[in-house]
Amino acid sequence: MVAEAIDRNSGLYDPELEAMSADRRRAYHAERLRAVVKYAYDHSPHFRRRMEHAGLTPAAITQIHDLARLPVLKKSTLPQLQKQDPPFGGLLAAPLSEVSRIFQSPGPLYEPEGRRPDYWRMTRAFYAGGFRPGDLVQVTFAYHLSPGGWMCDGGLRALGCVVVPGGVGNTELQAQCLRDLRVMGYVGTAAFLSTLITKAEEMGCNVLEDLCLRVASVSGAMMAESMRHMMADRYRLTIRQIYAIGDLGLVGYECQKASGMHIADDLILQIVDPQSGIELEIGQPGEVVVTVFDHLYPLIRFGTGDLSAVTTEPCRCGRTSARLTRIMGRVDEVTKIKGMFVHPRQVDEVVAAFPEVLRYQVVVRLKGHDDQMAYLVELASGVKPEPLLTKLRDKTRELLKITANVEVVPPGTIVEGAKKILDERRWD
Ligand SMILES: [Zn+2]
Image (tube, rainbow, N blue to C red; front, side, top):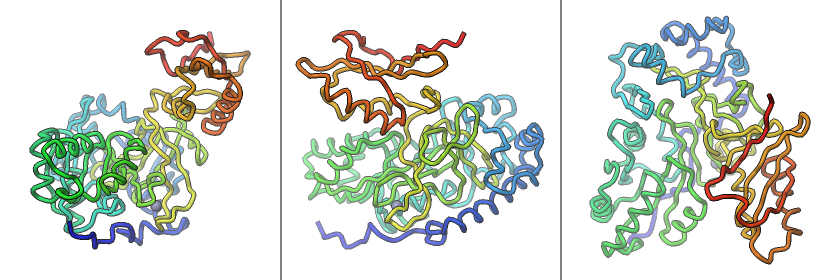
């Protein structure tokens, strides 16, 4: 194959927004917030009712911190709202004729797409992931009913890429497309990328010589870092992750540095306590709550149900937005321990570095009024408890910011399929 002449690693798609100073970003967000609140209040019956319930008028929301006065609109309530007042529960702030497509997600939840090009604001994410104008890109998200395929399709075409709308399945035909068309970019899940490459190899392709794949943008589920490294080492394929939601479009995206997902510039993202809606300190995990400035479907203080945390450490790519450290799972799976939200996946993360631990379970108990967190661990035969238990305790404190007891239990105590976090607290 011809040597790669394109620079896929540097540059910003929209330097004016992506490299804003913190002050400029705050002012930009506040200005757009005021405009969308006023617009939604005048045009979305549901939003006006929400504001009235909270005793607010648009004049009450002029800065980002004022959003705290408006209760979070939980994504899980949308299907019911839409059912009561179809098709969009009074959230649409424009005539239906301004909608170009309507998608359906499980719920059922209906999501409108507006008419402007790259309606979902995806382009910058693909650019940050190394996609460039003229690239041939195969999109393997569904194009039927659910929004994934079209969302990516619109962003890529706006960037100047040539799209092969592969959709879901048809593995052999899709592998053939990759080879025959010399496709350079892949968009879809990490799992299907792996399936597709395996299929191409089964068909006799040498991935490095017969295929031209250079960049992949994956979404849908968090990817294991081992997969990213394997694809880079074995196939010289750069994989970057995108976090997008059917109702909102792009929320976050990895840059070439791949250390967390930059928050999209044209929205306000807050990490809040999923129960109280109060914004949490930087670094603490909580629910991702987003406000978009969209005049068609203005979702304001929209609780995504996703659990994540934010870092404001500068990124060497030049983008100045904060980054989501990772998506940790769904808010409805978390347990609050000593005031911190803990997700089963975080529990896994603590133990991942200790292969001597065969099985484990976190048990939360109440001692007086205090939460007690204990890791129950079953160890491989012959493993001495120390210094392992001390290390586990330290790791728990480092990753979860909670001091836990670690208790060794006999093999077989933790049954197959047991809950990762067993909450034994009773308040009655
Ligand atoms: Zn970056």
